[in-house]
Length: 350
Figure (cartoon, rainbow, N blue to C red):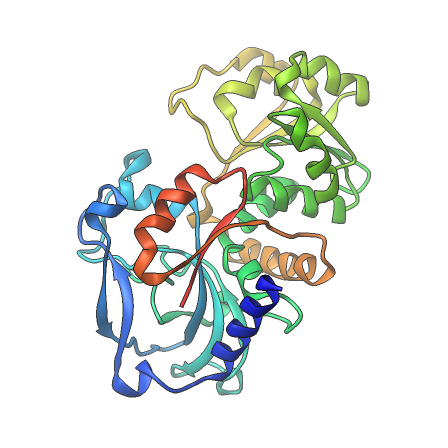
């Protein structure tokens, strides 16, 4: 009942068009230096943005928090601030309320989810309004809860690229490591929808059933050890692709389980300078695809957005929600997101 009331509140918010835009100010969260959430995040008022050529403005209902947003704010991976003030979060969902020159005026009032809102741009979705290029505002069917789509872009598009960046997977075997993470869940759904046999890995036995519910055909609990042997027992001829969460820790296992000509598509690593078994990888003609969500080809982003929306609509992809927060509590939301990557998404309701 609480969840239904929450969705009813979001639906009411979608329908209400009065407020900040008419006053030309909006509430937003931002930071002007990198650091811990409670030390650098500020909530206050800013001018409502005006869409430029080819852009649309979205009245944000839900903003998603992803580890990539945390990394930019904390300065992880050597990231720096390219702008003096940053409104965080690349992902969100809401309703288009204005368009710029050259954008489709017929889209005003359209329900959408957005991605890469803060990629090479200063202002993301942790605000009442966000402006994005028109193509990054994806039509969202009314049956899909806004909070499911609000955290979809960064992990979902990364997952799509990891699974399909080297071609179709119909009839192939795909291993998804960390299958219950934000990227992992989407990778499982995309691979299964693409006709692959999906073998998922999870960190403990209690997660096996959840990974099966998420769409995996078989699940291997890595805490029991012997991961390569157990995957090869399921796929004696080897697997075709691995969507890899932890390249440094798993490259040796991936090498063992992949067929000749297989692919490792990796989007994360703990050790930024991992040891790479060059010759064994070369002798098996294995491709290692390194992925960074901000820089995929636009056509790949568009294809991913279409498939992810279809997966949400069909119910093939669903994220548990680990926490819902108001904008004033964004620091608390960021702190939870740093701990909750494998248990669910964190969202901010505006």
